[in-house]
Image 1 (cartoon, rainbow, N blue to C red):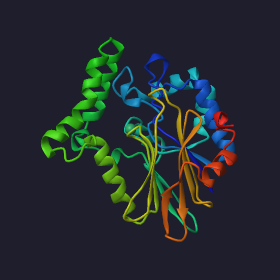
Image 2: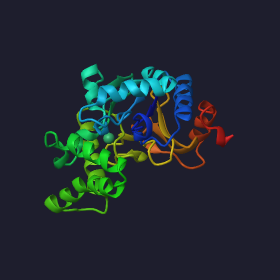
Image 3: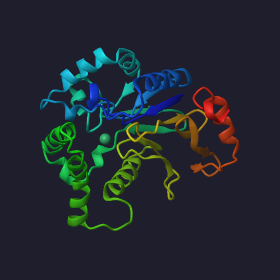
Amino acid sequence: MRIGMISDLHLAPGRDSRCTTSPEDLTRLIDQLQEICDEVVIVGDAFDLLRARRLRGWARALDRLRVEQPDLMAAISGCKQVVGNHDHPLCARGVPAEVSYVSDKFKFIVMHGHQWDVWLKKIWGMEEGANFVAGWCERVGLGKVSEWMGDVPGKVQEWTIGATESVPPEEQSAWHGAEQELERGWDILAMGHTHGLELKVIEETGKLVINTGSHVHGYQDLAILDLAQGVACTVRDRKLVQVSVFDDKCGGWEVSREDGRDRAWCVQEYGELLEDEK
Ligand SMILES: [Mn+2]
């Protein structure tokens, strides 16, 4: 089974959308992923529902999006989806917090990753309220304020718990959370949320974490996992970035060398997506 993944599109109606990939490009990308993969999963934050013009106006925002971007919304509805922190109202419409796949070799779980957020964001109503205010700051030209608000949870974490590494506190808690989740019996975990695009092998266990990137910083990110082949890869702007392969001998994942055969395999299999590699 082959699973394609994208995350953190942060789509909203009109000018409120933070998605930097055009609706046409995004629709095409999802359609191509559907062709190549058995399933496509949106790993959370497909929509920016907490920044609607009215507090809790998410249902209306979705209705507007459906009118504005019918093709894109149809493509999205053909995908599996897990909720993120910015579209968790979708729980009410049956979108799950996680999906999992079990093959002969691997147990694989997909979740957005906000589950491991710093404590400030977990206070009831805090994130919803803060995003509502941040959304309006951006609309009235106070983008700097909303940026500053976004930095607060990490800073508070730093002040109260102390920074131990050079890694930003929010990223640190995401990686830590992912490792802990893997210890519950999963072999592979995919997450979004940090907006980083990365394949990371946990040194001690050889387990794999796939971070699926975003579509809000001008990049078009995605990841593909082939469970039968034991090959994972990340793609940015239609160029292959990292490839990781499962080594049967040592029973763990490893990140493939630049000139590895596995890269050639990916280029051959995913050619449709990797226009620039040809
Ligand atoms: Mn998120």
